[in-house]
Image (tube, rainbow, N blue to C red):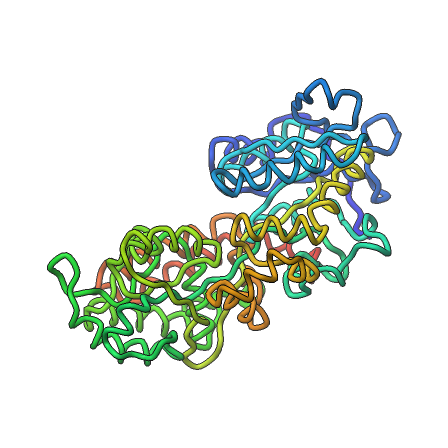
Length: 468
């Protein structure tokens, strides 16, 4: 057990400054002892009674749910996904008589994470927090997250989940983040274009094979222009991390930055030449949208984008195919998406009630309903045997590709998950490389790496307390 002392505010501190910065929309900072942990490792509400020092955010139960323990869930899901989550939570409310849970939308992942930082500083927090795979670790190393092992019983635990997804929330043997809306990137291709050109009805096995096919694809035209073969994403470094792995590199080894060497530079140079020398690709504002409307022949985007792409491609008049991500010198499949954490400093009664909600969402029928409504990966093994989901997996090869690719998947490099502005710095470098053929990828990543290393020094002590 790690030992910490409660910080008692007296004058404005670095924690005060960073919390205010987060409330203004700056990346999630170090929080200090946000969980209110005492010297003996327990939680203290300031009176000496165990139960937590963090109040609950405002929650307004309808009259039919009055008198129950209230649970506030902060969500980053809107649209169809938000509606699907709200429906499941309402089903939970109707399934029992002791707990009322309410979903409260807080904006997309960066905005909702910044709001949580401000909430921790203010001393009133949600009971369940939805955090992206690249955000939960930042709260972990600030002692804000509740260890979850003790909430599982003999009837619910790791064996119920797809282990590769469950294990991403582990630090050592302790779970801090429970997977829920998870995805991997897929390679999407226009089956109609491929058939027209006589290309194989599959994705390319390697990036080199994609380049060979691109010469043929570019002979076609769309809107009076040569058809581009591939759209690159410039606002998300997730797909580029996959390419870095595929070219034999990593963005970092732990917190030791490696983006300026090996596979990262090789992948960036390959992509840049493909765009500017071969003239086969381009930097898209929204690669999935461009693919769905038929203006590009292939793209890499999330498993969760499949349903929207189906709808767009039906209007554009072509058939969609999906495939494993291309290799080059190695395989590279990153997982993404979100999961749920509890806040360490909340009262025990609220944490117990919050975990009952997580257990409900993990029941096979509910997990299957979530996957079917959203297109996210099945996270509970038994959910794949629920008839509606089993039928979908059997009848839709594209959806099944994501499940078949999952054994190759792994979690993000640490520099993305733990450094607050890590992804922003990497994305800024990628945008330079993808938008300007004269920028040397080595020079760009040398600059990015230097900025990343400066940031690492601020978080390394806290990171090493958990990871050594």
